[in-house]
Structures are given as C-alpha cells and as structure tokens.
Amino acid sequence: MKQLISLGLLCAVVLLSCGQNGSQSTAGNDDSKKETPNGKELFANYCMQCHALKDDKVGPKLAGVLGRWNNDTTLVVDFVKNSESLINQNNPYAMKVYNAWGKAAMPAFTSLTDAHIKEIVEYVNAGVE
Image (cartoon, rainbow, N blue to C red; front, side, top):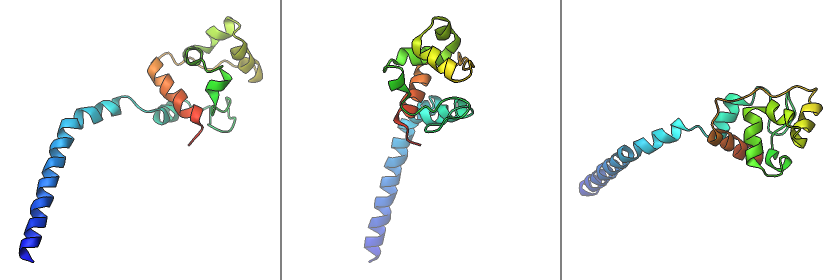
C-alpha cells in the first residue's frame, strides 16, 4: 500500500512539474491574449453604457448588427470609429439609425483598433450574453 501511495505521489509530482513547464512556456501566449481583450470585455468597457445585446437603450440593440449593415464589417468599423462621417456621406443605414435615434450621432471611438471593433462585432452579432 505504501508503494502505491509513493508511486501516486511520484506521478503527481511529475505531472505537476510537466504542467508547470508547459505553463511557463505558454505564459507569454496567455499574456498576449490578455493584452487583446475579447469582444465581451470590449463590449462591457466601451458599449454597454449605451447599448445592450437584445434591447434598445440609449442606442439600438446590437445583436445581429452585422446583418443590418449588409454583412459589411468595414462599414461597421467605420461607423464605430466615426459615425458622423458615414452620416455626412449619406450612407443609407447610417442615416436610418441617425434619424431613428433623434438625430443623435454615436460618439466616435477612434481609440479602438479595427481588430477590437471586429471582436466586438463578432460578440454582439451572435447575441449571446
């Protein structure tokens, strides 16, 4: 019985050691993932003040947003970065949103990268909280 317990402890030590080595070698990868927040985190930090996924708030609900923009991610990115630019260009959907929401333009989010906005779009488009 003592041999079985000793063997079990030895196996546990070996497995833990392997896990630690693996964790150390991938720690940089985990950190890089933390440096690029996912869509849910970005949504919480930049969008939730005015938007919800399934209900209108200060701004429109965002679930399924990509379909409302004819699946054109570039237009969504442009709108998030500077909605007034698309409004001034008379983009039909930008004008529809602008008029439907009391001619209030969405604030410009120029600090967000295209990749960040695409992460948000991927998250909100699914409509799953």
